Structures are given as C-alpha cells and as structure tokens.
Length: 260
Image 1 (cartoon, rainbow, N blue to C red):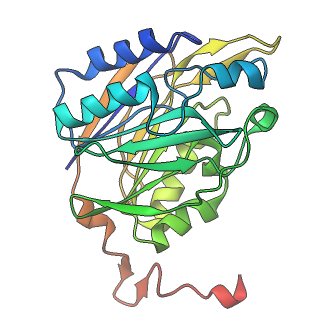
Image 2: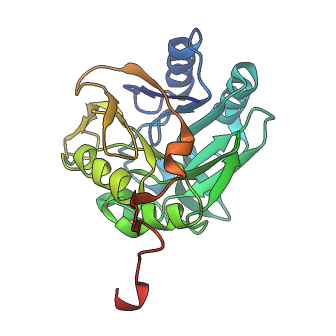
C-alpha cells in the first residue's frame, strides 16, 4: 500500500487557490492514501468565530469537499484532509476521510490547542477506526498527539495506520510520533504545513517536518521545515497487525489496565 502526504503553504482564506495548488501538486502521483494538513485550504489563524464561520463548510458539502471527492474518485484513493466544519450552530476543527466511492468519514478534533478554544467547540465524534482495503485506518488532528490515549484508543479499535493532519508550531511532535508508532506498533502519517501567519498580533511559524513512521519507530520519510513537498512510502500494513514484541510479550495482551 502506498501512503503519501502533501505538506503545503496555504494563503489564508484563499480556499480555491490552496485547493488547486494541492491538486496540481499530486495530479501525476500514484497513491492509495493521501493525507493533507489540518485546515489545509482555509488557513489557521482566525480573527474570530465570524471569520472562521465564513470559511467553514458542513461535512460533505462545499467546494473543498467536491474537489477532494473528485480527486478520490479519479485516483481511486483515500483522501484525508483538515477543514473548518460548521454544524448545528457550532464550529469544529475537523478532518474528512473521503473514499474512492465518494462516501466519507468525519472526525472532529478532540483536544483543542491554545486559541483554538476561542473559535472551535471540542469534537464530539470521538476516536474511531474504519476499514480501507482490508486495513484499519484511524484519524487524529495535530494536538491530539500530546495525549497518548488518543493513539492507544485507535490501536485498541484496530488501527494499523494513524493519519494525522496537523498545523504544528511546537517542536516536539515529529519525534513524539516515533514513540506513538512504537508504543502501539502502528504506522503514523503526520502531515504538517509550512509558512507563517500573523493575523491577530501573534506570529505563528509552522514547523513542517511531515513524517511517515513505521511500527518499529523507523522514519520512512521526512520533509523539511520551510518548503511544500510530497512524500510517499510503500508499506505493508500487516506489519502493524502483529503486536508481538518477544515470544512472551505482546503489546495489547500484556496491558494491565486495572493498574493504570
């Protein structure tokens, strides 16, 4: 299975331009799964909820979804991307996993970071796993990485690949995802963005360093800190199905939750 990501540099609020840039960048690539960053087309630093609402879409609606749905069908691939979602009068920092048949799965970010709490409501979907080509797929968004329970819940529910759209400004996540992969024996695909935003008097610099990591913690590929780019790895998802560490140890069955 070929898993890929595209690390972009969006221009805030220019959704059509940002979507077109990504589609052009991946149009000649082949992949089974493509992961894009958190809020990849809208930008990150909203001045207020009204501005965020103006750039948000209901799940499964809007131009971004239509373009990603078309890409999924044309590429016969799973496309995972982050977007601002509006639903029932609330805003969520969400990701959609669009399947080749045009259907989708929605995840709403559980752990909001810093000033996101002034814009978004905490997600209500919870962590879940769906199957794609006989492989368990889970989703997290950015700051969810800081809570080991997120990746562990996905693993317990059968995830073999954890797809992780991100807008990282802290330096710790790329290395921490090696631990998340290793402690759960899963593949992780963290797709960040690059560039900076200063729309509220606070400068944010996004660190890039998008990574694909194997269940043994090996970094299968990594991008830099400043430039957009495409990254791909040919993986065997079954390596994440075997949780055996030694002849006498297995990651999940050795757990003793009554003591945690």
